[in-house]
Image (tube, rainbow, N blue to C red; front, side):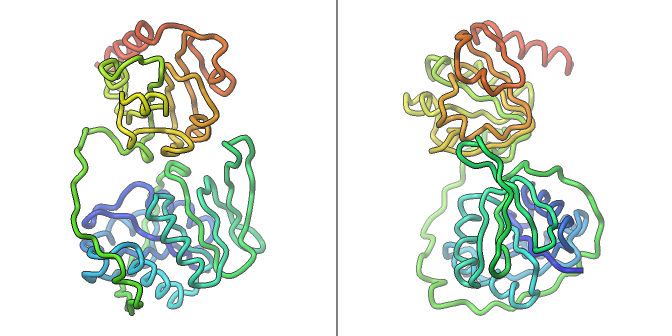
Amino acid sequence: MAEVLVFVDHVDGAVRKPTLELLTLARRVGEPVAVALGAGAAGTAGVLAEHGAVRVLTADAPEFGEYLVVPKVDALQAAVEAVSPVAVLVPSSVEGKEIAARLAVRIGSGIITDAVDLEAGELGPVATQSAFAASFTTRSRVSKGVPVITVKPNSAAVEAAPAAGAVQELVVSFSGQATGTRVVSRTARESTGRPELTEAAIVVSGGRGVNGAENFAVIEALADSLGAAVGASRAAVDAGWYPHSSQVGQTGKSVSPQLYIASGISGAIQHRAGMQTSKTIVAINKDAEAPIFDLVDYGVVGDLFQVVPQLTEEVRTRKG
């Protein structure tokens, strides 16, 4: 059976959820071969094997930690040459998309970004994307070379599928560009204890209607009761009420959770572009004519400062 390369997103051997989703999608078109790079790469094999990786190619070198992007592109290129896969799947993170684009140029292949589904086709893997602020759905395939496809988080359910997961060392020859940009310092992101925004199964977002940074405590309380991530509209971020790292929208982050709750968000196209592919959308807004109600599955016309605390209390009661 044909093999599919899956780029592993991990932190010191702890595999992140989007990689496990990629393994689920990869099994639809071939046998997954995982590529894990950097410190702790060998430690990823157990989890990857549990989720379908028939092989795990690992490489560890100082270049992966000390320099940006290019050493990983070198490694993926080496993996493509060694495996001759039918496709290369990469998580749709900022780094992932840059790696994928550089790899596609290197190997002379086409690229598809931000896919939300993947299936086998007679002429190669077919990817589904949401286009024009999720107003349209497209199905595409790469017509030249080995398809390089980045996939948005939460596009597939994580499914266990035990496989051999044989660990093999990947021999990498670094290019002259690999040491062009050095990482001179790192600052650990302050932990909130909440899920990563782009990976969360539930996202609770606040907008202009929250009316102040201090009032985001209401949004955070609901998110914490649900085990959700907290998002914000551009209006809330521009006003300085919440960090830009939590902005959902065309100029922020794109999310596709199982449940998206928009509180005090009117539903401008900029925001809709970042959350419209969510599986279930709930809106709370006192303006019954707000555009957000055009795309929701459930809408509540009411004051968020009355509705959200009641919802939070109900969630806590049912959990308790």
